Amino acid sequence: MTRGPTIVIFGASGDLARRKLIPALWHLAARGRLPGHFRVIGTGRTGFGQQAYREHVMDAVRAAVPDADAAQLQGFAAAFSFVRMPEGVSFHALREALSPDGQCGDCIFYLAVPPSLYSGIAAGLAELGMMDEKDGYRRLIVEKPFGYDLDSAVALQDALLSCCREDQIYRIDHYLGKETVQNILAFRFSNALFESVWNRNYIDWVEITAAEELGVGKRGGYYDTAGALRDMVQNHMMQLLALVAMEPPVNLNPESLRNETQKVFQSLRPFERASLADPVPSVHEACGPGRPACIRGRYRGYLDEAGIAPGSTTETWVGARIFIDNWRWGGVPFVVRTGKKMPVRVTEIVVHFKRTPHILFRNSASPQVSNSLIIRIQPDEGLLLTLGLKSPGSGFGLQQIPLHFHYRELEGTPLSEAYERLILDCINGDPSLFIRGDAVLACWRFVQPVLDAWTGGESPLAEYAPGSWGPELGDLLLPPGEHWREPCRVLSEDGVCHL
Ligand SMILES: NC(=O)c1ccc[n+]([C@@H]2O[C@H](COP(=O)([O-])OP(=O)(O)OC[C@H]3O[C@@H](n4cnc5c(N)ncnc54)[C@H](OP(=O)(O)O)[C@@H]3O)[C@@H](O)[C@H]2O)c1
Image 1: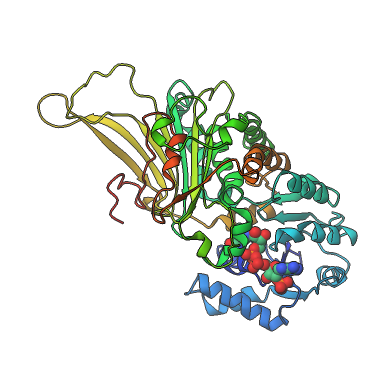
Image 2: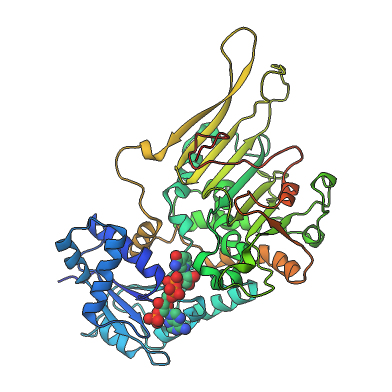
């Protein structure tokens, strides 16, 4: 019998394994996407007996897929087993479970544990030869966050590379597993119509929003040690920015794609220290040079949430104005913002095109028309393009008309969860949608001056009302005269949100 891959989940009792990994494996198995005879070994310090673990697996599937077929579920759970690994104990029990006959075959180690454990687990695996590829591939999936700052990311990178090769490491940024994020590439590089105007000559500025409706909830303890910059900007938002800004890769080989991403990160204009210091307090006073480039905010009431340290200065909102110093993007601001307790959970990219050089239809009754393209990552995944068109009737009154496409209207396969795609890609040895080591470090290098300025207390923490779009100071990041878009859950209800 050919043995399929073995997936070892460290942290098998945890939240990620239960809510994401087990359901993702279920969906892959149910669609026949997993190689035959795969097996999953869960590990943990305390944990389960074999049957209890299989019950846990079935519960996790039922929570995500209430109508899962009972017989199919039993068969799925039978592929799972559990190995107890109390703290401080070597990895012999795991090696024994992996290769009872001395042959392990292909193997993926998924590190779904707190980041402080990543390097120790990699070392434990390497010490017993479990990263050696004698009888199959060995891959390590590393969850985010990869490091806490530049120094810790470099240390983690060095520690991992002392245990295995770079091409054995699959660093997760689950945003890259989203269909709509991958669609940025498909949209950009399959439509000559847009590629020809995708540059500084036609694009005025780019706005990237990742808003969450919820506050920190039960994750206060973790969140308070991270904050929005580490949790969202350094990883997810930088990846979105790279996909919008990158040059066309020569082909879709993983390294071609990742090289282009890295070139974007290498072209980021470093933040100037002065632009991170205390911004002028009034929005109206600050227009010219010297405007802040990165602003942090915190929703009112954050300090009263569970798990938050007294006197914490952790930010729940970040906005930044970023420039990419290359020929395509010279001078075009990329303005990004992310925060908690905002009006709606939405992630989108808005490409604002320049206005026409001469306004023919100058009519006080008409809105000032400009084209913008909205790439909606979530929810109501899709695209919206605004066009200026003539209003019916006499004269030349204009209206701004949205043309929209919604993924939900496409027939066929429903959008799959990011983790399904990423696990499958790892099994297939395709690292395109995983972050390369040099890219992670480049992103940390870019945000580190901001962390330093904030640690030094040089920038105030602007409060905002829960349910608002962030602090008023955030407007200082925009090009003069521009406004943040206020998106609705429903892509096409632009500006008239009823939800
Ligand atoms: N949850 C998510 O949605 C999510 C999203 C993105 C990234 N992540 C990342 O994925 C990883 C896992 O997240 P999670 O939410 O599943 O975490 P979790 O529930 O807090 O922990 C996962 C498991 O790790 C084990 N563990 C915890 N502390 C340990 C220690 N000191 N020594 C040994 N084992 C320990 C625990 O299992 P035992 O007690 O059985 O050992 C626990 O069940 C983290 O790095 C997180 O940042 C999670």
